[in-house]
Structure formats: C-alpha cells, structure tokens
Length: 439
Image (cartoon, rainbow, N blue to C red; front, side):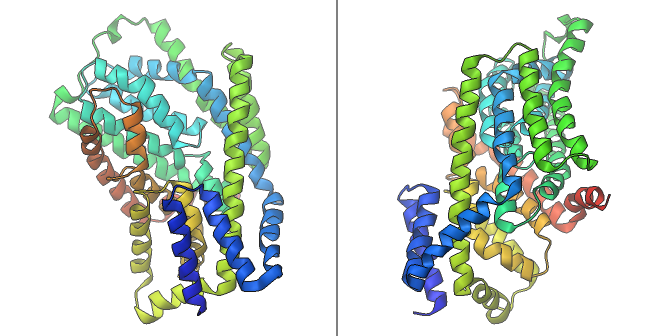
C-alpha cells in the first residue's frame, strides 16, 4: 500500500471512530498508535513517548490551567450578574440597547473565560430571560446570545488559540494579541447590525421602562462592576504587553487577581473554590490528552509524507492557487463544524493544514485567527451546529428549534463579512502582535 493510501486509511479510520461517539483523544490517539506500530514495529512506540515529552516541556502550557481557573472563579462567583445589571441600566434607554449591551457582556465574559460554553451558559440563564421579559423579539435575541457566546474562542485568553499554538508551534502571546482586534471588530459589527434592525423596526427591541428610576449613585456603583473584569484583564495583559512579565507570569497574575476580586466582593466560598479547582483539573487534563493525541497523529503523518502528497495534489495535479486552496480549507471547517467541536476539528486537520498553509506562504498567526472565526461560523451552522444544541438545551420552552435555526442566519452573514475582511486585510490581525513584539 502506498504512503498516500495509508494516510487516507488513517484519516478514514479516525473519522469512523469519531462518528461512533468515541472520545476525541481516544479516537485520534488509537489510530496514531496502531499505525505507528504497524508501520515501524516496536520503534513506533517512541512516537507517543516523544509527543509526551514535547508536551511536558512546553512551558506556555502552564497558562492553560491558570486561565481556566480564572474563568471559573469569575463565572461561579456570579460577577456576571452585576455586569448584566450594569448594561441594563446604562443602555436600556434606547431601542435594542439591552441586546447591544448583551454583546458587550459577552465580550467581557470572553475576557474572563476562554471557552464559548461559559458565555452561552451566562447569556442563556441571565440575559435571555430578561430580554424576553422586556418584550424583545425572541428570534433576534436568541441569535444575539449565540453570536456573542462565539466570541469566547477568539477574544483572549482563548483556550482554543492555546491549543492551536501547541499544534502549529506558534507563540501563544502573538495569537492572543492577534485575536483582540478581530474580536472587537466582530462585536462592533454585531452591535451595528442590532442597531440598524431596531432602528428599522423598534418593536424588535423596545426601550426598557424602569431605567429612569435608577439613581445616579446606583449607576456609578454598577459601572464599577463592569470595570472590575476590565481591571483584571488589564492587570494581566499590561505587564505582558510591556515586556515586564512572561506569558505564564501574566496568567498567574490573572488567576490570583480574579481570586482576590471574588474574595473582596465576598462571593468566594469553599464550595465555589472546590468547583473551580475540580473543573480546572478536568478541562486541563482533557486538553492535554487531546494535544498529546494530536502530536502523535501529526508525527505519523509527517513520517508518511502525507502533507507533501496533499500539497502536490492541490498545487501540482489540480493546479489550484494558494487562495483557492485556503478558501477550500475554510469551507471544510464549516462542513466539519456541523458535527464536531472546535478541538476535534483542529486536531483532525492541523497535521494536514498547518504545514500546507506554511508551504503556501501564508502567515500561521493570521491563519490561526481565520481558523477560529471559521470555527465560530461552524458552531452556528445548521443542521448540527454545536451552539445550536447548546442553546436548545438552555432556552425556555417558548423558543423552538426552528426559532433557533432562524435566529443565526443574519449573524452568520455578519461573521462571513468579518472573515472576508480579515482575509482581505491581514494586518487587522497582525498589526497588534507585530507592534508589541517589535518593542
């Protein structure tokens, strides 16, 4: 059997195992281990050992548990309740103001927790019932929650970008900086869309009727609730951007600052602390197993020369241009996103796509941002988008699955425009990391 056929058989076997519902790391790692032993005999056992050593020696991986812990501390201590109250008071006096404020809430939640699930949970349990109670259109606000939650995997500290950095062998700090402006651009486009729709049809987002009864002192107090997560983010990022601390040291500052803030606000209990540490350990171990499996799978693919074969197939036999190949890659992410989550997509295709993108002459930091945005789109694409079913599980009974499907199409269009803009103007993603690291 040729090397190309072996690589194709490995890929097909892995997809088959994933369709059976096996764990992502188990499916990928099993295929990699069996293929290594079948191809190289007992010498193949060095591949997982080498991958494990590479993982243990990757110093920036220490940021992963710290940022996960920071996110859980801020989430479990219910600081998001005050945040939403702040946006309600300050933006409730305009049509669509609460929906626009919800996008702002999601940006702040993203800066607290690098997982989109956290934003979805907070948005669906806090913001969605309040928006529906105040007469907002259920289809529009359902889309607002899903679109805002998707920002969690782009705005730093993004756990997905940490995973991409490990597999693509790129600096985590540069990837996080590269995600800031695209994330803010996308949030701004969401807000602009909501504003335009509510100006055209004010019934979609009525003005809140109780904001006038809130005193100025209460508004100032609630404004402090919104400043708190920004202050934590600033305490973490400013020393790193100025070169005073390393990325790992900044992660430790963020985790300790979040813990101190929750203690100061008297929101931290022993039960909450236990939940935060248990969930941090669970998610960190899950990601480490996935990275380990992906490194082993990629090593086998490199040994087979599969990447060069695919490169030759696209550029030599099909004679496709670099941009055509890149667009086909993005479309494949959207297709896979209908039945896989972001980590599964990344570890499946990264051994193939990342070296190919590099050989085509594209910047891997920029491509990491493109991958993340495309994953956001895939999360919201029917029929099996990841966020669609999360929303269905958390939404109240009056929101049907049909409503959830209808709600996402305008926001998907906005995200496609944002993706095309960043593809056309790479400096939107690359300017900030180039500026910071040039210092």
